[in-house]
Amino acid sequence: MDINELCELSLNYEECTKLKNEKNVILNPIGTLPKYSQQNNDFGLPIAIMDYQFNLVDKYRKDAGITNDVNLMNCNNNEICNDLEKERKENEINEIPHSNNLIEFINIYKVVYEDLTLNHGYFIKQGSKYGCDFLVYEKDPSTCHSFAMIQVLGNNDSNNSKLDMQELILWIRVANKVNKMLIVAIVLNNNEVKYIHIDNYTNNLKVIK
Image (cartoon, rainbow, N blue to C red; front, side):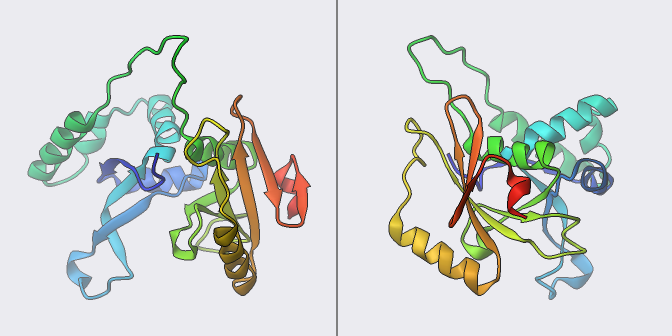
């Protein structure tokens, strides 16, 4: 399980804008702008849709009556569209029914991302810049700074179920340095999420503002 797992590349900038404005979903432009290739801090198409975001993007498309094929046809370069569609089909994972003897795979990053976005109304961006999983914003990230760093842990059946003390100390130091809260999000067996602040415990993330 990797938070950096890429699910899809999109060339639909309009969809990216609508997802941010209507659903609080922040996608990630990862391509260098052709006219400004020297400005590595400014990125453009294609837009990366991460695995933990895809459920919300897919639901938005279904509600809007948009299919992946239509989305890809919005680009001007048919060759790029065809390559992206071919890659999408090659990487498509067929659902395999699991028996009662197998543990159902749970993407803990997806669970936390959807909880923070849908249930709490936050804007969420990946937190690799600060060495954490997520950064939490109360409003559009273009208008404010993040107020919290989120580190995700799973239950006992997950590979991410242990908290390394040395890493915790490093996260605390970074959080203090950049003036942000450090919150550990624990995904339980029933997909319920518990949030632990370094000096406080709460079931409701709104309390720790």
